Length: 343
Figure 1: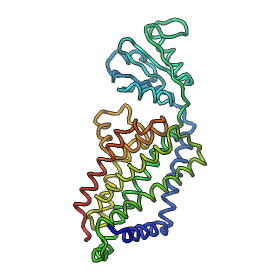
Figure 2: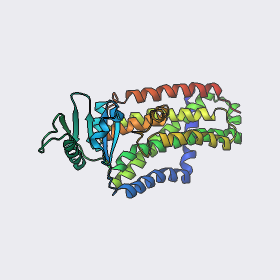
Figure 3: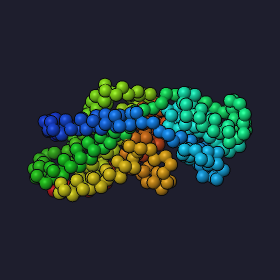
C-alpha cells in the first residue's frame, strides 16, 4: 500500500463531500429538525397507561394479569432483573414485579405512577395500611424520568449515520462506476485496496464529524443528558459506522446502475429503520419480531449507544452488540472485496 496514493484519494473524496454543500447542509439539518419536531409533539404527552415489567416472562401465565384486571396496565415480560430495574430507574416501567415465590415488586420512589400501582396491588392482595404489600417483598429504585427526545436521540444519531454510510459509500461508488471514473482509476497504479480503504476512512471521518455536530446543535436546543462515558459512546459509533460502511461497499461491489443501487439500499434501510428501535421500543412485540430485529446491524448500534447514553453502561456491558457489529463488518468486507469490480 502506497500512502501517497491513499492520501490523494482520501483528500479528493473529502473535498468532494464538503463542496456538496446542499447534501452536507441537509445531512446536518434533517436529524436536528426531526429531534425538535419529536420534542414538540411528544414533549407534553401524558400517558394514562401504566407499564409493568414482569420478570421471567410470566406476563401471560394467567395469574399475573388478574392482579391488574380492569386497570389500564400493560404487562411486559422481561428476562433480566438488571434490565428491568434499569428501565424502572428511567421511568420506562412504572413497576417491576417477580410473581415467582418469594414474590417481589419494585417501584421508583420518584414516580407517582409507581405509588398508584402499589395501591392497586395492595387492594388486590387485601393488604391494609400504606406499607409494603402483604405477601410481597418491596424494593425501590431512584432515577429521573427520561424524556422521549432523550430516548430518541441515540436512535436518530445512529439512523443518520446509517444513511450517511450506505448512501455516502455505496451510492457514490456506483456513480463512479457508471460515470467511468473507476475505469480510469483502473489503469493507474492505484490498487482496489487503496481505493476502498480511502473510501472507508473518508466516510468514517465525515460520519463522526457530522454526528458530533448534530449532537452539539441538538443539545444546545434540547439540553440532553449523557449518563455514560463519551469515550465509550465514540467507540460504539466507530464500530457501528464501520459496519455500515462495509455493508455499503458490499451493495456497491458490482452494481452499475444508480437506480438499482438506490433500490437495494432502500430495501435494506427500511426494515432497519422500523425494526431497529429508532422511534419506538419493541418491548411487548412478538418474539419473532424481536429476533428479526436483532439480526440487523442498526439494532445493535442503537441498543449499545442507548445503553451508554441513558443507562450509563460501559463497553463491557455492550460487548455482545459490539461483537455482532465487528463480526458483521468482517463478513461484509470479505464479501464486498471478493465481489468488487472496477467495471
